Length: 199
Image (cartoon, rainbow, N blue to C red; front, side):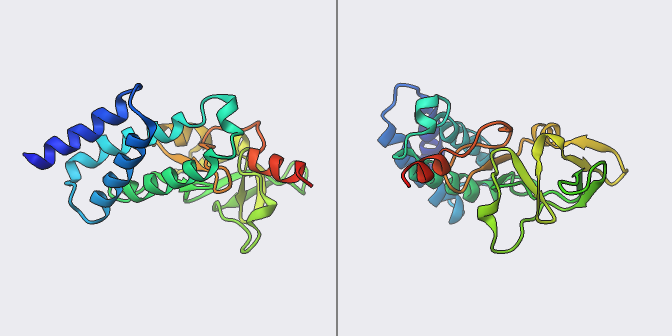
C-alpha cells in the first residue's frame, strides 16, 4: 500500500503544472531508480513513463526554452531517464536516441536522382556529427529527410515513418540538445547553432 501511495504521489506531482521544477526533477530520478531495480511493478510502468515523457517534452515547448543552453543537459538527463523506464514497457522500449530502431525502411537516395534507398535506420560508425537528426534520419548511413522515409512492413506495405512513430507511440530525442525530435522536420539543432555562432 505504501509503495502504491508513493507511485500515485509521483504521478500527481508530475501532472501538477504548479509544482516546483526541482521536486519534479527529483521525482523523475526516484522513478528511474525504482524502475531499474524493479521496485516498481510492471503494471505501474506505462503510467509513470507517460508522465515522465510529458515532463521532458514540456521543457522544449516554448521557443525560448529550445535555445536555452542551461536546459540542454537537463533535457538530456531526463531523456536518459525516459530511456531507462521505457525498457520496462510491454513490448519493449519506445524511446530512442537520435533515430528510432525500425526494421526495414526506404526513402529517396540522396545521391541518385529518382532512385530509392532501402535498408535499416543506421548511422555511419563514428560519424554521428554529419547528421542533423532534427530533420533527417540515416538509412544505411545516408541522411534522408525523415518526412520522406517509409517503413516497410512484413506484408510489404509502406507506411510513412512519422505516421508509424505516432501509431506505435515512439519518441526520439536529440543527443546534443535533448529535445524531442520525433516529428521535427524543419528546425536545426539549437546546440549546433549556438556552437558555431560562438566561432
